[in-house]
Image: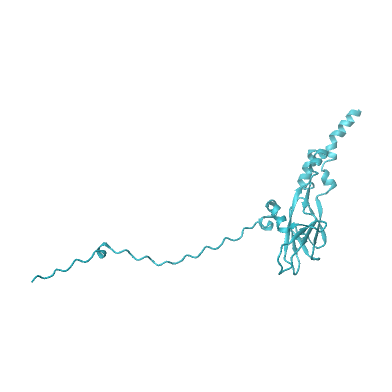
Length: 202
């Protein structure tokens, strides 16, 4: 009887622990946004928005584009990539195949990166590029470099235009230069010298 109970418990364990990340982490993630221009409006492709410094709770499963806009500053955007978290393998071991499938389907095993999203914006009229900072305020690199690393992958979900993959318009073709027609070659008759006229004899 005891062995039967143990076997039954072992059989139900994967179902009991299934969707481990879903239970522990949930399908949404809090993402922090900040900038050197306080009150910057941040708008996500999913429609959520807030003014820095702020946090938004967004779905882990979906890539995002965060647009930063503030009067007097050059607008910029940061691409957030939905990445598979390191807990995915553990979820498969603890939660079984069903738990892994559930977590993979609803995105609970994923996390959005970068997080926090802290941008040093550039004043209009000044040169330089917007920079991405870590949670301690240290420069990680330029926003453009961060976007370049993930835009090919992110474009699959948010579209090429939003990911910054749109091709620049092709340069206009140079106008055709009008040329004068070449002079016609002289005919054989006109090219031959004229025969001398008969001179009357005395």
